[in-house]
Length: 352
Image 1 (spheres, rainbow, N blue to C red):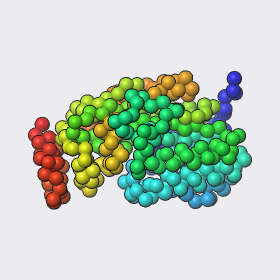
Image 2 (image 1 turned 180 degrees about the vertical axis):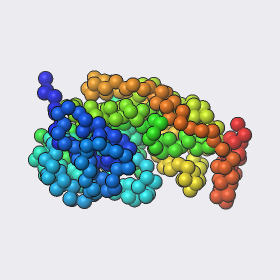
Image 3 (image 1 turned 30 degrees about the vertical axis):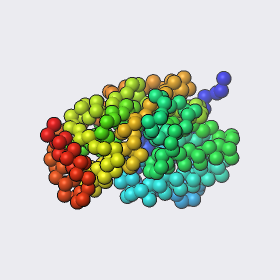
Image 4 (image 1 turned 90 degrees about the horizontal axis):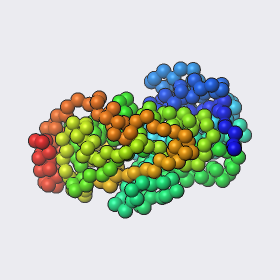
């Protein structure tokens, strides 16, 4: 039986983001961990306890000097950004996700002290199509690869990690493919979507969705960063909720829109600052996604505290009531010559 790994000097990227900061603090409190270095381009807004913060951009080769100087043995890569508006748009998002990962892996490859790498990946690598299996196992690939956005970035990130594994076979590598993280404190594109005063849903679809609670995500990442599991592991809460069930739990009226018009509605929501949804994310809302979590229990040894429904309910409890007419008025003003069927659907939904 393989001896349990013990992280002593850990570097966590993305500590100025919600999950990254919490994880760094949790790792620093673990027995046997001597030092935790947190890196990001801006100081963390939250208290990260005894973590040493170093202002560094993982897109810059100087990250290698940080790793070497601290004698890092475990790297936890949390700085893969899911929502472009949080970093100023799609271009900086892709640079951070893809270029940043390349530079970080190059630094890890040169550092003789690094012996373990944990990467926060995403179930977005599986895409969303009507031909998908009920549950994706870690050995399955996307039926249709994401055409852009965060899903495409995640596939590229995982590809670079596999290349790193070939060049550094002595390094333990674990990638966690997290379902959409949700909860009362975290903000994501999904929480923004279900926080809108009126929720547009693809007409004729009621996709099954899986979530993982923010606390469970942190617990799983803590096990990953301080344990010895390797490979790829799906992480999600048990069960599913449908889009319409989720909207009901969030106490939001729904507006059915043709799937072909979803891009227009998403653009309106983005211009209003309500949500930022890519075409691949709209496909997710139409077709959903399910994850097999057998390996999460048998390999990682992790048991979520929250089911998918409970995770969503903990988020929904933070929401107030929506003001649907505001969205419809704004859509009408911005639409110009847009599809009248979409506008009629929006108007009909507000009266529900």
